[in-house]
Amino acid sequence: MQLERIEISGFRGIKRLSLAFEELTTLIGENTWGKSSLLDALSVVLPADGIPYQFEMSDFHVDYSIAHPQTQHLQIVLTLSASDKNEIRAGRYRKIKPVWVEETKVLIRSTIR
Image (tube, rainbow, N blue to C red; front, side):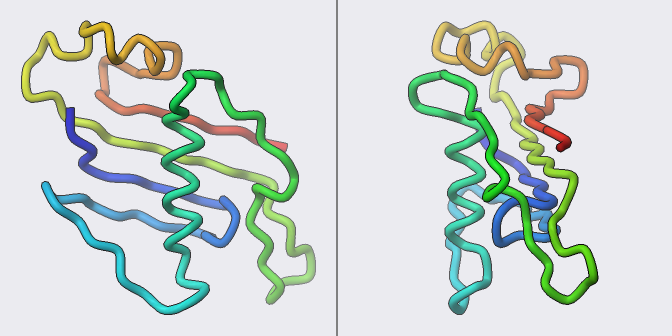
């Protein structure tokens, strides 16, 4: 299983991001670009212990350039590709099954406050 794309909106330091991944992808950027927020988004959506993450107000993006800076919508979407059509049935993917949208091959973790 390979991560093809991540789409993030309203999460921590990221207002909106869509990033495609290759077999090897390197993140390079200045401070406040969102590298840590991107890695945090991956760990939130794919927790090592399999326990769904409970979002907090501090997880929502704050845009100080508008009158109401707190984002009310947070969305993290992963697009994964399987090397084999039966790969999703493998036991190691059991933990993500509750949020896996099999028809579209997209893993969605979204919340609205």
